[in-house]
Amino acid sequence: MIRVVATILLSGGYLFASSGEGSTDIIPRTVNFLIFAAIIYYLVADHVKNFFKNRAASIAAKLEEVQAKLKKAKEDKERAQAELERSKELAKEILETTKKEIEVLVQHVKEQAQNELAVLEKSFEENMELTKRKRIREITKEVLEELFEDKSLELDKEKFVNLIVKKVA
Image 1: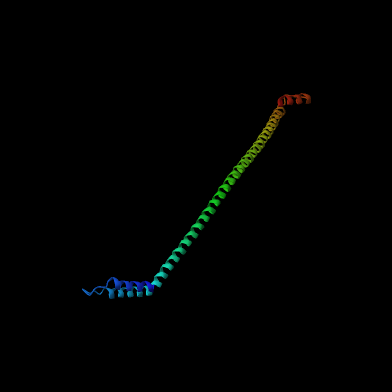
Image 2: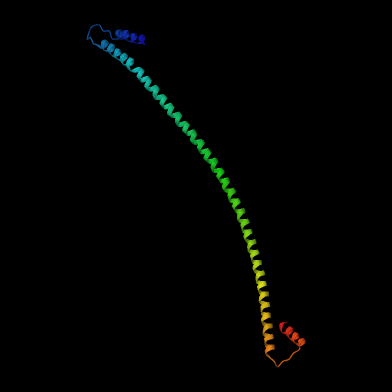
């Protein structure tokens, strides 16, 4: 660095050397500028380098953080999709199980209805038989009452039994 500054200073003197006519102050200005630039570089260079180094490090850290978040989001998405697939499979299994249970329940209800219908039919037949017997008893009672009330008819036991059998049949 010092060599570059010395070279510029010495060459500036040779380049701008004049024979004395119209003297200018270019050399002192150039020297002042170079000294000013060197002082500014000396004072600011480390701070600027550190600023850009820190800036690059913070950008790299943010980039890594974003990439980590992106990777985590992709993993979460894959887990969610796997969970969705498992849920769909579970829903299908539940649906199939429900359909089978419905079929079993329908069959059970049909069997119960048939059993109840058979019980009702049997009860109806028994009730009809009972009603028939009651009616026969009532008819028999009426016939016997008529016979006993009618004193004009004197019957013996054999005729009496035959008459009852005819009325009942």
